[in-house]
Picture (cartoon, rainbow, N blue to C red):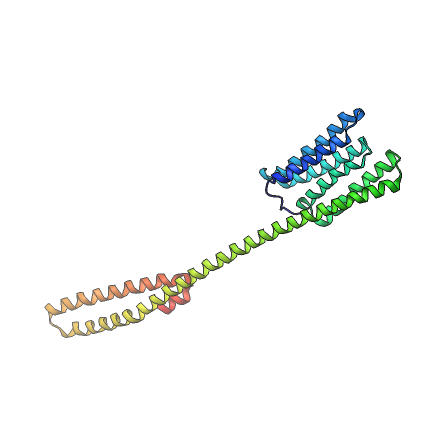
Amino acid sequence: MSSAHDRFNPTLCISGLLAAIITLVILKTPEITVQLHSFIGLFGAAFLTLNLSSFLSRPQPIRVAAIIVQIVAYVGVCLTTPHFMSAILLVVLAGQLPFVFSMRLAVMMLLGVNLAAFTVHTTFYDLNWLNVLVGNLLYVAFQLFSLAVSRNVVQEQLARAALEIKNAELAATQTMLEQSVRLSERLQLSRDLHDICGHQLTALTLNLEFLSHQATSPVKEGILETKQVAKELLAEIRKVVRAAAKPNGHRLKTRVD
């Protein structure tokens, strides 16, 4: 089932209600006014419910129920009057089916409803089957046109949704790439810092160690303090390099050590 019917469409609502009102005016007869009003009113209420279902938390079951109620209401209209103009309601119904069901199921449902209407007209009212068939086929053509137009709208909405998803994925990939580039630059800077300053500080520490053994006590104390500062600075540099290499795993951390 499709879930493309996610936005309220006031134009569709108005057109569907106008079709129901026009049908009511055309089919109105003194003997069956109450029944006809009831069934067409039920059809219009179900139609509005389906088109307003996007404001509800679980719209899909309500849409399915609304379609079923419209079908039942249309069959009730057929049982109330034999006038072929009642098939206008099926044109409205056909325009809604692709938003709720797959195209294959929508066509099957539409053909089933037309077959039910044909059966009612030929058996319940005993009308000439050929005249009923010709009249039904004319309205079936309009129904299929409405079905095809709605299907194109559904396809466009699904394509737009897929494009939005692709754009979001592309934006996420671009963000990840930018983060990866920044991380790579940061890691390279840390490596350069370690290679240049780290090696020099190590050599400085060794030289100070050597000098501490050669110097007299007053000088030796100053050399040892300088050596300690160099060791602490080297430790801080290695700490910074390890922090930069950490997101890329233990292999980079080991290399830094």
